[in-house]
Image (cartoon, rainbow, N blue to C red; front, side, top):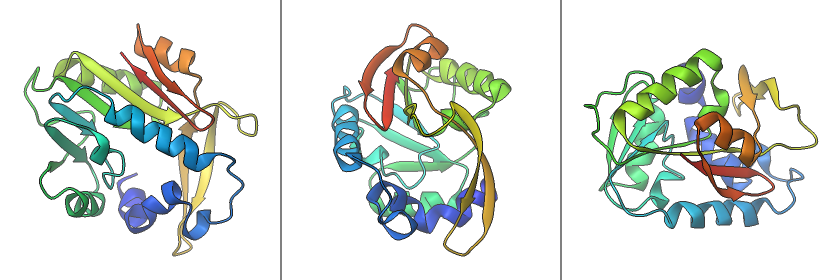
Length: 195
């Protein structure tokens, strides 16, 4: 996965913005749901937050308070640092984060949890609980045109092909997995749950 996200970094935001390979895709109300998602993130109280698998910082920039972004991809972090020069960004692994117990008030993650298999989910949730009392997860909403879980082939602009595991959630399903979760947003494309 490291190689995939390093390769995808320069074009990652195209997915959010509907550019490049995503231009012209049939995604009804996509922009509305992206903006609703941004508002939900911006409405979170400003506390010390670590954004795990922050990528290019596309969502990170909407978090308020003291924010630290973590990603395994150096190329993703370069873009995030350019986007948010005053924020702290650290290269690290989501399952062994380089922080002391209780170092944060919140763990935030966007479009990471849905790529984890069962063992990885357990590892990530244990690590999130070690770091903070609150966890906020943003991921993809269940869609009629997709199975709830699948292996996807993803093609990058350079023509390279990658296979990625992906899950989709209802708000209730995600809240149940996280334990005592509160659904903050459940749109056509995205769900946000706080646990």
